[in-house]
Image (tube, rainbow, N blue to C red):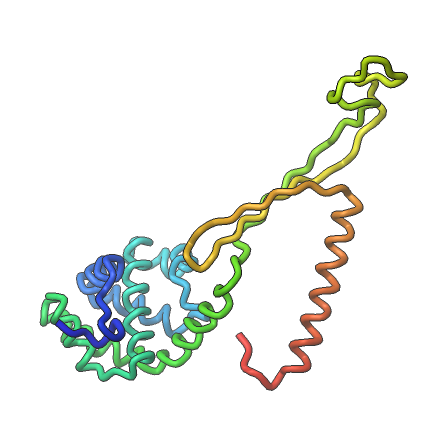
Length: 227
């Protein structure tokens, strides 16, 4: 069994088959909701769009919307990536034992979304390049902390000293930070650290300077494709 839509010697993943099953059993009204979302969205990220007012007002459950959109997204990306004909896509769906009637009915929906293939594929490749090589930041967790400053530490224990570990000298205002990153394989990496008020101010200033440099870089490359 040779498929066209999944690359050389490729085979559909279980996730795609699950999403495809959901897509094919949605009605025409639901298909129109999906098509209008694809035609109006900027980033094609179904997971972040399922709570939008347009989707909330539709007959689709959030999980139906996400699964159906992901199936369509994969088909359209593959259509562009492998330079397929619509008939080749429909043949692949037949090989997956999808109902012929629903495959034929899916044809007009795919034709409607055909003009979006190039932009969707460009976003797919942008995601690939922006997330490859190094882990990308997924979450920032921060809490404020009031750190007591004692005259002496609890260890090592001094046998004879002029200072006392019970004498409170004052306080230090701190921020505890945990950064959560994820690599291309989905493995999460966490890095925690603490900073003082001064370090926090330095970090904010450094990020501001980085933003200024990025603006200059964007201005100097304005003729290049941007997001």
